[in-house]
Amino acid sequence: MTRGQGAIVAVLLLAVPGGTLAPAMRGTPSGTPDVAGTWTGTLKGKGFDQTGLFLNASFKDLVTLSVTQTGSTLGITVIGDQTLEGVSLTGEIGNGTFWVSGVRAGSGLPTLLSGHVNLAGTSMKAAGVTLSADPLLYEVVELKLKAKKIL
Image (cartoon, rainbow, N blue to C red; front, side):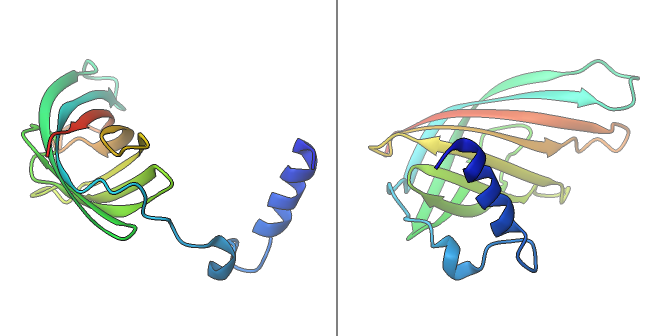
């Protein structure tokens, strides 16, 4: 199948009523590798002010992640970061890729991370987005996470 034919097939599949593939056609995430444990690393963030009134701020924090996993269901709690302190994110992992989302403690602002782990499940990289908790700023914060499993 050529690239163009693949694109046509994808468009046709997404054209089914409801706009998504039927659950039976999608399959389920494999839940591999197992990444449960304690992780440590860095979380970088860069804010993008949408009003033009403030300078774009950035930060880099050392973080600890408490990661739980049951099958393909993944949970990540962030500890030690000024932006995401205590946030609990949930999602899924399969074939070395994952996504997690949740709301930030206190503010209720949404956070989303998407990333991958190595085959051994000992190194993680992710990118994501959250919003500024400051009510005077209309700011989107771009996130980048790098972590290693320590336990």
